[in-house]
Amino acid sequence: MSRARMMKLLPWIVTPSLVVLIIVAWQVIVTALNVNPFIFPPPGDVWAAFVSLLNDPRIWAATGVTVSEILIGFLIAVVVGLVVGVVLGKLPWLEVSLRPLIVIAQVAPKVAFVPLFVIWFGFGLTSKIVLSALLAFFPIMLNVLLGVRSVEQGHREVMQSLNATTWQRFVQLDMRSLQPYLFAGMEVGIVLATIGAIVGEYLGGNNGLGNMVVSAMNALDAAMTFALIIWLSILGLVLYLIVNELKRFFIPWHESVYGLRTATA
Amino acid sequence: MSNEALVQEVTPVTASTEVPRLRIEGIGRDFHTRSGVTHAVSGIDLTIQRGEFVALIGRSGCGKTTLLRMIGGLLAPTAGSIEVDGRPLWRGNGQVDSNAITKLGFVFQESNLFPWFSVLDNIALPMKLRGVGKKERRRRATELAELVGLGGFEKSYPRELSGGMRQRAAIARALSTEPELLLMDEPFGALDALTRERMNLELQRIVLETTSTVVFVTHDIPEAVFLADRIVHMTPRPGRIRQILPADFAKPRSVDLQTTPEFNDIVRKLRHDIDEED
Image (cartoon, rainbow over all chains, first blue to last red):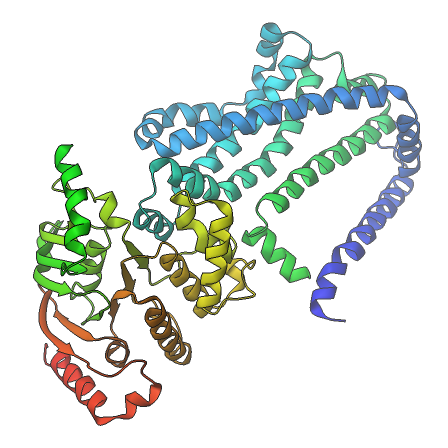
């Protein structure tokens, strides 16, 4: 078998094997140590809870709520992050003067603001969207900022020798050069947006998947809590894969896409 | 404003008679560093007629690239004047004249192709910036890809091409606006010797087909003698012209030229004079 074929097959062999191994180890530990299923349910119980979860109409309504929060928050983060990143990247004096504030805002534990968001925006979707957007904003903005500053000197000189206008340089060069950076920020951002929405629902919600997790915990239903975590993981994976697919569509020329394609082709 | 209009009216009339393609007078460039002022280029006079191929040669630091960048509108001179077709390239304030710079085509040492564009879109970029319609752009770019030997690679990304092919694409891009003057900064410097020899033959063919005027920077003596009508030998500190040697060989030139005594006389003289600088 060729090396390239191996590379393509490898994840399809390794991942299922590992999953099976983890489930077997899980069952063995739970049985051998005789763990109370209230504390750590065996895989069979979790699977049963997962199946009942998928048959419960509430899960779809809750998923709809949570996904809307994530997507709206993420979209706001992309638009605002792109604009702010470009402006700060293009105006070094502004970036330098705002840098201390940006760093403080970035390191501040934003989850701590949830009670305030609830006071300001209520228990509905808005407070979760705000947290989602806020968490996803920073990696996107900072990556875009880096992208604007990383335009190759040689490319700039090409535009200079072609007597390109400022606008043409911006559209044909800056905006193109920063695309890989934007997508790098988006890949981190979609994960954080998901966390934002769910944490928001944990702390101040009466709807959505985070709220269902809290209900299951309050009912001491560990198996259901696990089942919901698995569902949330699947959701997170799907959202991440969508962003990844967008990247493959928009920047097929970039090393991160092209290199992988040729390595596994 | 009225001055500007006057120049535009006068230029074509005089250009059709005997205004040289490029006239450089007393050009100089100083760089201010912490240790003081460096005269990178000083007091250069050079006139290039249309259809001429001129090579700039010299050791590193002789100012040949600095000179080319000033001719290309990328670096403002600190003294002297440059005229393209009788039109001053640099305005007093260090700004480049946009009518003069559009007559130029620049090929860099690195191809500097945009990785997000296909070969065709890279070649068409200068036309896109000038507002040439999409259909016309594609037609011209396809022709140019053919001219530089990239037929069949129009849809490829630059990363899929070899170094030599990337430089072919960069040359096609520079030619796409039909420049009056083609400026090349060691375009084959990063290529291996065999590819380089082929690229020299290709460049000669392209220049003859397009009747271009070329200023070509290199540190390779045989390359300069093989390609150029005149070889401008520059010396460093400050960058000045030491001598200008003609290489009057019939064109197109074949690789066999490089084994003739006449060719090697020029190569030997240049090598001797450059060695002597120390």
